[in-house]
Length: 167
Image (cartoon, rainbow, N blue to C red; front, side, top):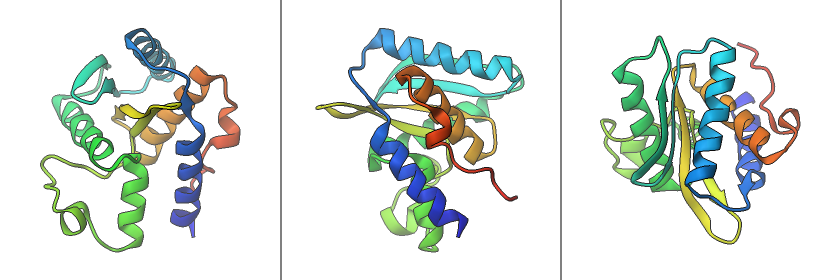
């Protein structure tokens, strides 16, 4: 099943994409790298890199709206609350045939379990924030973040990428 396979790969992504350190300069570099990928591909996305409760990089590219910023906030809240990527949470909920409100009593106005927010994990420190993209279909939002993290860490993206979706 595609959902189970994706969930296994996302777990590996989360385990392997660990930063040696994280500071404001690294947040800016990661955000700029993501922005360059998006601009080169003419993607209409909002990009946010943050420590929880502190934005360190933010950009909204042409074609986005304030609604994308709201999605960024809601997806980031999921990572802050559950310490997993928003895509992983969404896949788990779909497999269990439930949602954030039923399982965790989290209101949909504040939390979104759609792909695009990924935890920023620092070696020997744990999760310190997240990087979020909104504007593409959720699986593509997630993968754009993973691709940028791989590039930032000098990792081979293709070895961690989700397979091409059948649909």
